[in-house]
Image 1 (cartoon, rainbow, N blue to C red):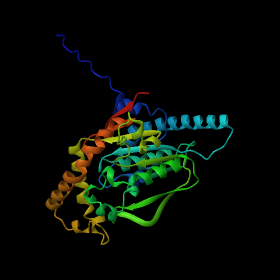
Image 2 (cartoon, rainbow, N blue to C red):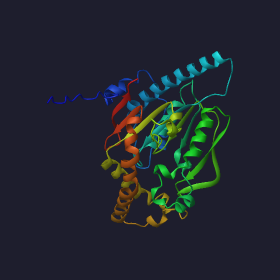
Image 3 (tube, rainbow, N blue to C red):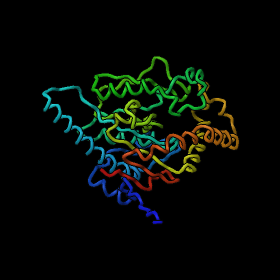
Image 4 (tube, helix red, strand yellow):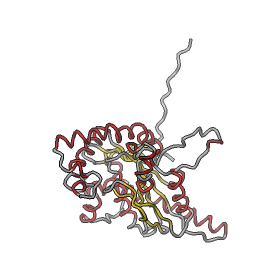
Length: 320
């Protein structure tokens, strides 16, 4: 009997260490100030200007090239068809775990990309606004699965993305409050034909739920509307540590607000806060990461791999 030959699969990504990736910045100018950076970083994520220069400037340069190429393609299509349809935004999807720093990544990219002359209008939308209201989650018995794929109103989210991508003059997204832990009634974020729209959320890279080989199961998914996708990655043990640290800091900030959904946690001791945060992570956020979020990493076009100090250690870019 012939032995089976093991043939290793080639990686679909090109991997860069910090030095290699930083060199790709070329002559891209640093267009962000120390004061701006302090406002953009997360509660327990101290971002340095070196990190911006080494990691985010090369990324903004890459995205600028992608946006420029896409704009030329749209213009060529309009010329061919002889029409001048509404401006079609370039949409960037950013995925990753709770507490991994994807919100900081999104805000820094929004700021840097808005400084390029060919796409000055950059909007940012988070998927939190497309969570079902707490009343719906409670009625369905999935309140403790908030952030899992089934807790989102995907029909509404896809309708929003379709309208944005169609170039409609004005599209509204629901607003979510982390303070009250719920959708804010009658409050909206309005998107008015941006050059770039950044969409940040836990499960934006989810694949189709059915069998794609069966045409009857074909469905439009969120990532169908993205022109570029980013996954912010770190080892789960690091993310858990960041989550616990952030939870402790929130006792003196958001949790201390009388209107906060989590005000009952404001008076916890360090030991109690660690225990509660670890329990929430184990039951909800960690489970969601392993079951739903991490498996989508391979669908991203670019992966930022972070170390314990929040610094990006390597960058993976999908081969064309």
